Length: 69
View (tube, one colour):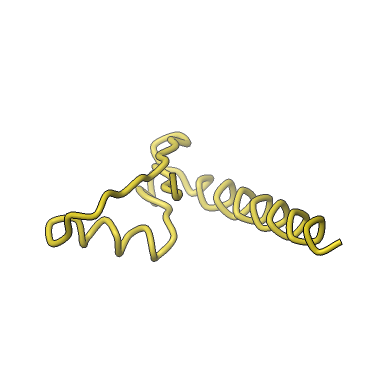
């Protein structure tokens, strides 16, 4: 039961994220990038770290949407 509950929770979180992104992307040229804060922090740490980083990049209109890859 816990496994199913976790899957439902994860699925709901993804749907909520997709809804938020689609709402923000409708602002058109006003928003260039949509990304969680932890992804942006990892991007800015790249010059100072040897760690690998995997990021999924999606384009909605002129807006880039970044997610963990």
